[in-house]
Length: 422
Image 1: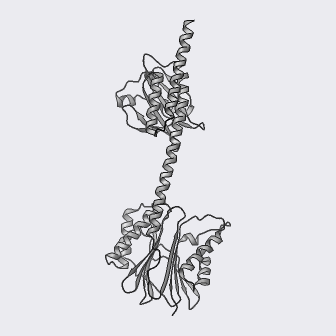
Image 2 (image 1 turned 30 degrees about the vertical axis):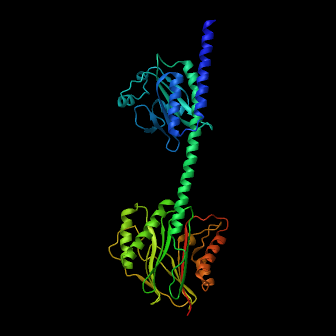
Image 3 (image 1 turned 180 degrees about the vertical axis):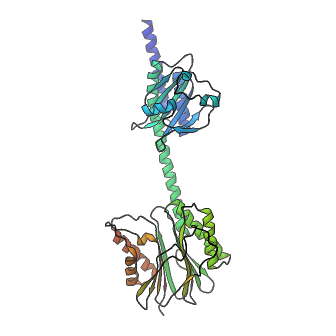
């Protein structure tokens, strides 16, 4: 009768230990601290010498060792070794003699100088039956892990898995919120850097607007007033949309403005900015850009269009739209030592120059039809005599009405310059 009583007392003590562990793991630990607590819990309850937690990375199908005594963090396929088999089968694996088991990898012992005798490996299964990771306990003090240890370990692993899953979900939520805040700040910075209005140029009216598809975008535009009634014009589109292209767009604008401050010519500004982007951007990235100077005294616009097009020149006296294509390669695509002579557009009274990104031309409706050049031309021709701020809004509204319920898929930038009628 004494043996059963002793066995019952042992179970009670073990359950009390697990309950204590459960209460402790309910504390608001961060992930690193939680991993340490899980290992300590396993070692204390099962009298193990050491412990290791491998977190499962579902995206890469790998196990990641983030906490282990005397070892550096590593990653390996979730099919490798005893931990990998545990992850695949989601079953407890009890190895009484590690060096007699062909699944055991002794390289870990060689690196750390530690001698692994026996090992108990446990799957950590979260709330939704998803694999959180694998817990390994090494070298039971005074012997090997037995059937009773396996039952205790299963109960312990269930509690540890729930705690780890909770912390991981909390951390992911916090990371997403932090990223969201950072993106919002990036958007505010990007939008605040855009000009609020076109500087006053005698005889001209102008406006621009940028509407990103995501929180941030790769489009850009800029107005810079120069001496002698001249205006620097920039409209560009970095490949893609999001944070990366937004940084490229910001870099282009900064380089252009620096060139203007140093007194560089239009050709020099374009060539040097292009060559710098060739060095800075990955091979699959580039920026299409219109870079030009409006001269209110000669009433013309000289420009380079690196991969940027179509460009619309509405001639009021003829009530016609003239389209211009790109004049050279996109910026950052290849190094350029010399450029072709800048093209020139003569601005007669009432004429409109429309620099519009492909987010407008390629805006699709539910039938898959694009707004296209015809849609843009119809808006400009029908409203060319209106103030440019109003004309920009009319074009945006027309695009949205054309698309209907279709979500905007690309960044939209519109820059419109109009010579006032005599």
